[in-house]
Length: 366
Image: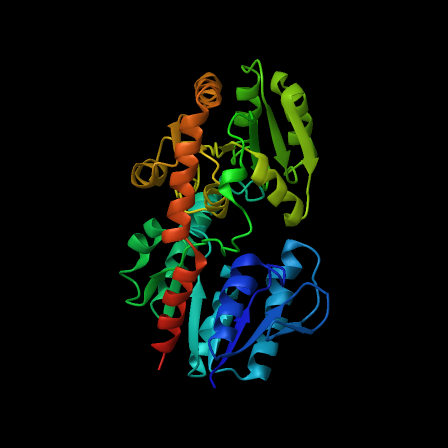
């Protein structure tokens, strides 16, 4: 039995992609799987996966230098056949493991070189230089790893020339068949958006659009990126039509998914926001929620293929509100778009299909 070790110094032990999808899929397909984390919650065994905790580190500096060293030390101690890491700060660890003749998989969760250019904690005059330097280093490393996994088709197109084993593994959802789409009332005028709330992710775009609506409301769930942004959001006219829940467990989020009839994804056109394969999109689609999404990047092609929503300029609150009104005035159209999304998830955009690709890739690592 091959022993596989997943490494992260950033993500929590119950990260959806890392634990529930990749680790559990590997364990259920005959691999001995362990996961090294740095969250301070101790060791445990769950669903056949051995979880090892090297302790939490406070602050970005300590995480980058101390946690990564601890993760690497534990990885060597476990002596796995395959190492699968999930954070760019673990690239040096990945290269050292390669030097020990281990199989190493780099799971590239984001287009980091692009995201560096919009990181607020990096001096804006240094972002381009740091992005360029990181890109050179990452390219060097990618050529040396045994496989690369990426959650966006556009990323695969950008990086597959560096490594012939570059696989698209989408953040598709695990279907649990616990929701009957026939129970959804499309006359309900409820918009919904769960997740991280930031300017780049369009929270101000959503609230500004609500200012133009005479009826309906927006359920907003998640944590604001800063207190300043939270206060700015509350000062907008559209806030009176927002029910803000704060951060909630997924069990509660699912209940709002079942009720909502319009899903909002109004990312600003910065960083990697032109990539369309997001968990939020797949969740909307599974719950039969038509999606109002950007009119740029992959979002346009995606909607042309699956016809699950409406593309609109996220920075134009009047245009967004007009499309919300249009959907609310046409419940049959909402049902049609919702049905299209649900069908796409059931037939192709689900984790079961991604698992097949993941296991095939692992089986090829001789």
